[in-house]
Image 1: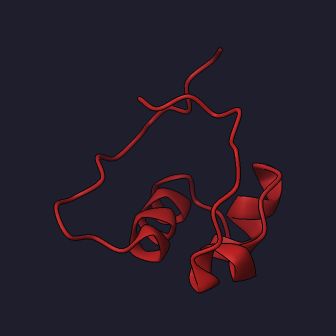
Image 2: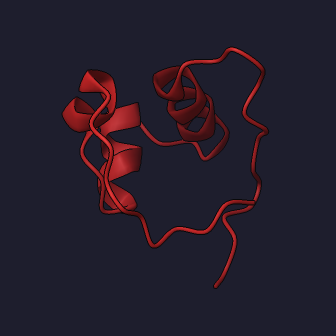
Image 3: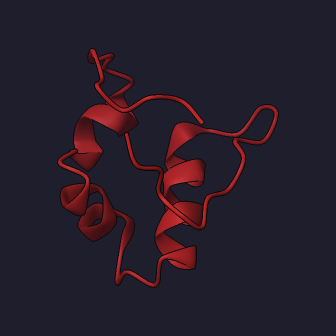
Length: 59
């Protein structure tokens, strides 16, 4: 599976929403919601903490 470059590490204690926001910024998207849509994800389940089986492999 291809990796998304550039990437950022998940910082200790960082919220997933913050991590997604930092990824959106370095990939120059207009918003974290837009960035997640490009990845086939929705922002609201992430904010609410819903778990979903993912096919995206960890870095």
